[in-house]
Length: 292
Image (cartoon, rainbow, N blue to C red):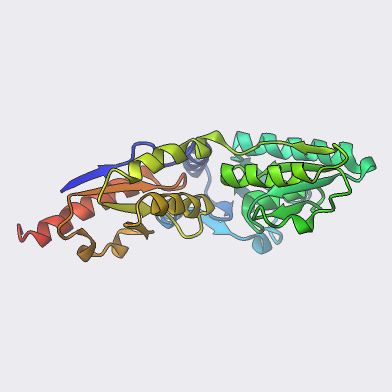
């Protein structure tokens, strides 16, 4: 049986950079807190936890004083930085440069549009860490649209500036943008395509990869929005696709009488985990063939 790993799967630049910064900080700090999971992958969170990284939520953060806190690639709203300044909290900021630039653009648009009554609209998942940080740049008044059909949340009589969470799907963004264009009677709509191409450019590749194999094993955390989006694409291209978060979820029955298996994952899936899944499948194949 052929077992292949998608070479384009694995950490994106922003996640890789954050992991590296965390590892460097842990070599110097006796205690390091991380505000939220450093990456939406349980195995990587567990690995860094064993090195001394303590994951906390925002409720815990807002009780800290005189501490060091790591900010992950997703970014944070201004309130996080303000509290840190007031309470002697050292921040190690690993916000993805693409997210940071997007935050600055939203802040600038929000400030310049206040006198015009401009609505900041973000195509993104409500409650997602990145979206919370983006919304904070618009005084938490941004309109969050998770689905292109939700335009009833927007006052079409007022100016609109449309942005997108960096990991949202490009097709959905274009669909939303076209709907708003068709209803823009005043010519006051501004569209900013802020979807990360490191993510969106994986879509054509993962479509092609999914069609090559009898079975697709997609490896990701259930917390990963990017993972859910990419898995849906795999399943459309190859209905025989399975979503797992760990090796323990593999079922040996999946691999009986198969010619090939393709393994791929999200931008938050470590390459080592993909390699481990491939090794585990090889062992299951040997077991099914009674080789040991």
